[in-house]
Image (tube, rainbow, N blue to C red; front, side):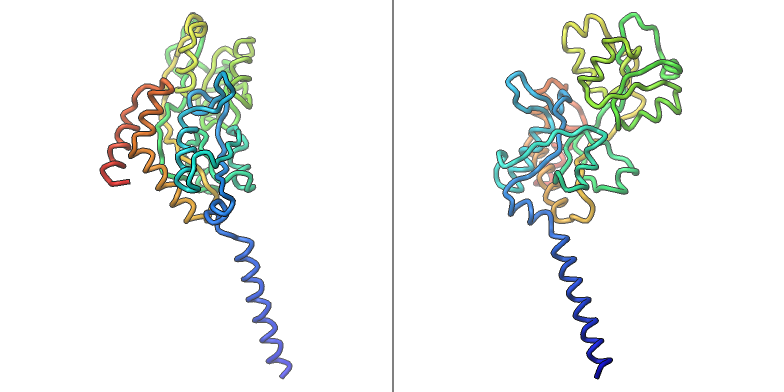
Length: 277
């Protein structure tokens, strides 16, 4: 009798623990819908992907995408909280539960895939280019050896710059600080994401003094990021991204933010539309 009671008590404890675990691991999609708001980590200093306009409004390629995703998941593009992140803290904030989704120039790689799940890819970014003074004579990446190069903390190519090419990196937390450090003479050039540096040269004052001295040696697929083990939420985000592509939203965003017209975005849009997304 005692043994039988102990078995029943043990089973009750197991089932109680399972119930508590189920409650603790509530489904993110249900949580977001119950909250009525999608919380997205974005860049706010990263023209053309996410930036503050002159009237302090957040705009950009990924801001447009984030609002579209919110419209599909919670029913309105205004039911969204945009949380500024940087490369060095975006995954930490995601896994801490501070944000639901990263849409912040997140490059896809195997190391990151161990700690987060990637959404559908939606952009193919020139991984890194070199912006330098017009009088800087340089023709290959091998020539940056020993040079001080300004960049951003958390960038995928920082290790390549130091270990492969022997550069000395001066790493900042934001693009404004990075450009300021360069102008203040803390580095000889800026090694950073191609679209951002190309965009910087649309400023006449920068175009007069600086140039893209070296083109990229690689391209990075860009995707969103979600926490591990949230398959329903990931599926809904993916559906929304594909729908955004099918409607031409990202093609229009490229035009609106002077990004040029990439074959990659156009091809994905055509494929998404053909698939009926």
